[in-house]
Length: 336
Ligand SMILES: Nc1ncnc2c1ncn2[C@@H]1O[C@H](COP(=O)(O)OP(=O)(O)OP(=O)(O)O)[C@@H](O)[C@H]1O
Ligand code: SF4
Ligand SMILES: [Mg+2]
Image 1 (cartoon, rainbow, N blue to C red):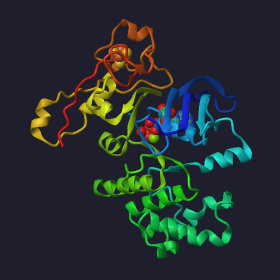
Image 2 (image 1 turned 120 degrees about the horizontal axis):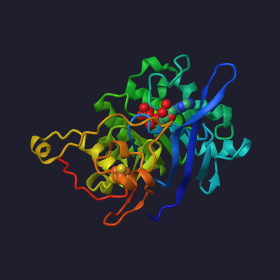
Image 3 (image 1 turned 120 degrees about the vertical axis):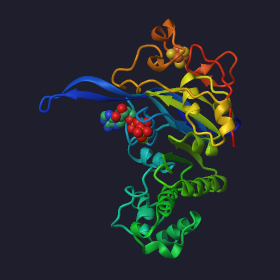
């Protein structure tokens, strides 16, 4: 892809210490929430991230936003390292990467007006909107996300779920970032409202040239909005490629299993498709299996899978990266 790399993530690791004892805390291990993740995000593109609960998606988002410090690895925004930035430099870089949270019901302070919620980032970044300009700016943002600018003095409870998520998006846009990390932005909304919010995100991307990291459980939502998709399993990225590649020709057994579980509306398509049922739950991220982390649930596992970690790379016969010793594309039947 010719577009500029706006976010570069290399070997990113985030371990949370696992301690015992109340007074004298002793570290007995670590939760390997994110364990060596690398990818690029290009200007104006959407990278979808999918994976089961607990695989490290939100932790990855927090480290990218510098809300959590990484254990090791690198996150560069436009070539500058955010993970080690401090003070004024960190503040300036944070302006360029903003977040839209999952739950529009709890992420907005019920005691603040929408004007104050959306304009709050200007308290820290006074250079973006001097005091006298704030109201006008917030009204413009309300209009941009499809809300009535006259409702600036209303409180969150006076809006529906979809409208509240629009408020969350307006707040994310307040500092004119180039990157927005959306962590399950529509999971808490009704299906009919989800489509409206996704359409709004796409419209804003086209108008403002935004790059999105779009995290979700729902594979069909991710497909709709993403240019590329990354699949995470137990702190690792196991497959990464263009959306058509991942959805139509997945090469990693885990992705194949995830896709086989996506409901197919048409009975004919259902018959044509093989459903792969994964056995058991993912192992604990405090004690992941040796070699390939997916091996305890993989029907293709062999001895080498326990001994050698498969790296994320383009494998023979495939056109995108996957982390499996026996990667093999598998045509998926989609019925629209
Ligand atoms: N602050 C923390 N301290 C200790 N462990 C944590 C912390 N935050 C997350 N974890 C653990 O790290 C792992 C990854 O969690 P994370 O929230 O990133 O997963 P997720 O993929 O976002 O899950 P979900 O889909 O449920 O939102 C989990 O085992 C979680 O319990
Ligand atoms: S490396 Fe082995 S265990 Fe891992 S996904 Fe591939 S076949 Fe399965
Ligand atoms: Mg999460």
